[in-house]
Amino acid sequence: MNNEISFPKLSGLTPTIESCTMKVLEEVGELMQLIGKGQSKSGESREVVDLIWAVRAIEESLDTAQSAITMAFTLCDVYEINLDKLIDKHEKKLREKGYMV
Image (cartoon, rainbow, N blue to C red; front, top):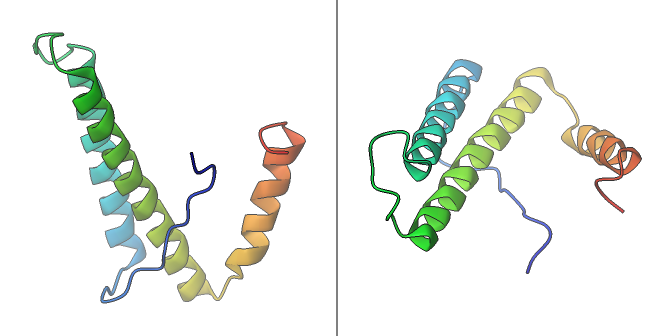
């Protein structure tokens, strides 16, 4: 199993901070809706096949993450911020908390 995931900077888009925010919220909403269905919070039978639900949840998680990464790329472009430095800082924080080795 791959323990690292890479998210590309997408091409063919002209995102704004506002459009990225809306897309992140949309994807989070879809993920929450799916989680609710998986917990029978929407009236569905618990007989939903767990594997199919898990795959859909992973797909929605990836959509959410890609949208958040697109927002980060957009903010870096607009404000001329070095993303590599922020990633290093983020990873350092994760190591200090014991989440990464």
